[in-house]
Amino acid sequence: MMDIRYVVFDMGDVFYDATIWRRWLVRVAGQLGFDVHYPGFFETWDSHFLPEVHLGRRAYREAFREFLLQQGFSRPQLAEVEAASWAHKRTIESQTRPFPGVFHTLEQLQSARRVMGILSNSELTQTALRAKLDVLGLGHFFQHVVSSCDLGARKPDAAAYQAILDCMEAEPYESIFVGHELEELVGAARLGMNTLAFNYGPDTLADFHAHHFSDIAHIVLRTLSVAT
Image 1 (cartoon, helix red, strand yellow):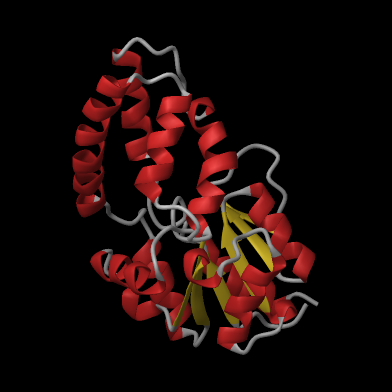
Image 2 (cartoon, rainbow, N blue to C red):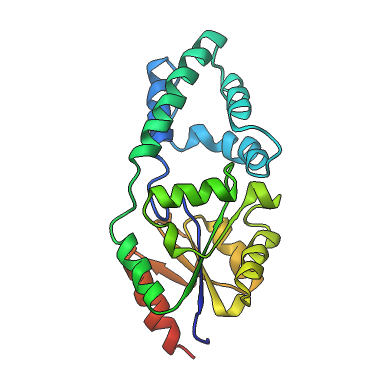
């Protein structure tokens, strides 16, 4: 294995906790009498609605409204939940902070001249993702940002990984994808990228696993650079 020069990161649940609003919404649904649990409540959303949103084919709010109606919310309940949800979502996002060790780790990788990029399945455009990174204090670390809604392809499709590699002028074998979802890690590996799992679930397959964000620098700069 050659020296890894290019590091591609997912964003949500890698740099910060992206589950806070979802957990809040599950509590609200419970207060309205729904017997729901996280993450089961969002399985249909994630599998049938969110892909279309991430590909830029549906507006987030319109798709989420249909999802809630499908889950059995009445229209009065829907109006109440929507009004509270979007306000609370904005508050959460304004208060979001990176996980411990993120800033220092990215500094280490930048100092070691690793080229870093973002590949995100998101309803946000590249411009909006860059603004979000700036709010988190991380924007200056990333030369390249690719969003699925601009690209029209999402992880684990090979076209998504290839798009960020093309931006970075990198080959799969000299890059590593840092993510948390099994299918996205498998998609990167299928293209020939090295894979590193962080904030991962049980039985998540990857070449490397980081228990703490700070482990990522050690893996990329030491373990990989001396591997043969």
